[in-house]
Length: 415
Image 1: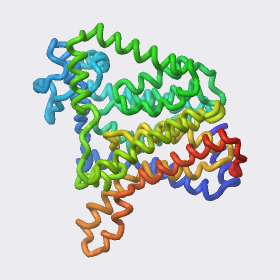
Image 2: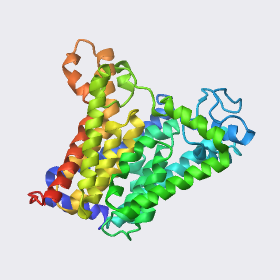
Image 3: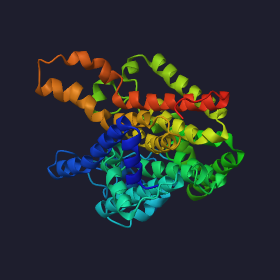
Image 4: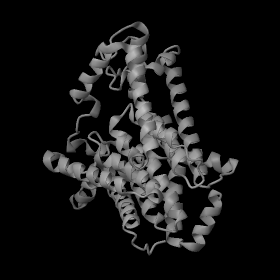
C-alpha cells in the first residue's frame, strides 16, 4: 500500500476522517516554512541549549574533568548549559563531536538525529505494509520536519529524536504485521531508548507480553550499565546516582505562570501536588494493567498506549516528551486504519499534539496582550486541559478499550 493510495481510499470510504487527515497533513506541510522564515527573521530562537550540555559533557570526558560538575568550559559559547543529567555512558558518543568546533558539531548532531528519526519512521511504515515511493519518502521527511515536538527538539538540540527513532525501530522489528519478528532486538532497542530518559520506560509496555523481549531489554540495559561502569568508573557512577536521588534528572515542575511557553499536562493540578500525583499514578496503573492484559493480537496497541502514557504521566512532562508519543500515534493510526476502526481518534490526538503549545500561547498570552477586552477568561478550562493532553487522553482511552475488548472477547462494532 502506498500513502497516496491510502488517502484515495479514505476519501471514498470515510470522508470525515479524510478531512481530518488532510487538515493534519496541511499543518505539517506549512510548519517547516513557518519556522524557517521565523528563524531567518530572528522570531524563533535556535539556541541549542541542550546540545551545549552534551557538548560540554564530551569536553569534560575528553579533558578528564568531573562529568557532573557545574563549572562552565570556555569552549562552549553562551548561553552555557552547565549540567549533564544523563547516565555516564550517554556522554561517550559526544566525545567524538568535540573534535569539531561547537557549531559544526551541532549541525552534524542535528542532521544525524533527524536522519535517524526519518529512516526509523520509514522502517516503521514498511513494517505495517506501507511502501512509499521515493517521492513519498521525501514528502514524509518534509512532514516529519513539521511535527511541532520535532521542531522544538531541533531548536534545543535535545536527544529526544534519537529516543523516538529507537522506539519506532523497536515497534517495527517486533509488532508490524509485515515485520520479521525479532523479539530480542525489539526489547533491546526499547531499553536503549529509555537509558537517557528513564521516564520513557512506559513506552516499553509491549515487552510485558513476551519473555524474549524482556530478556533483550534486560541484557541491553545490563550491557550499557557495565559499559558505563568500565568506561567511567564507580565514582562517576555514584555521582549519577546522586543526580537521580536529588531529582535533577526528572526536571522541576514549572509554575502555572510558565504554561504559555510549555506543554504541561494537568497544569491546574500543579497547585495541588497530591491530586497531580494521583492522576499520574492512576494513568500509570491503568497502562500497566492494560499492558499485562494485552493478547498477542493487541501488543501493537499496548505499544501505542505506552508511548502516549509518557507525556501524560512523566514527572517532567513537557514539549519534548510529546515527541515520545509520536511513534505511538503512528502505530495506533496504522493499526486502526488496518482494522477499519477509528483512525479519526488518532488524528484528533495528533492535531492536539501539533497545536497544543501555540494554541495555549494564543489564548493565554498573545490574545489578552494584543486584543484586550475579549472574554479570554472563558477559555481558561481549554488552557488548563490543553489540546495535547485532551488528544492524548482520547488515544490512551481508545487503546485501553481495544486491549480490554480483545481480552474479554467483546465484539468490536468498529471493525
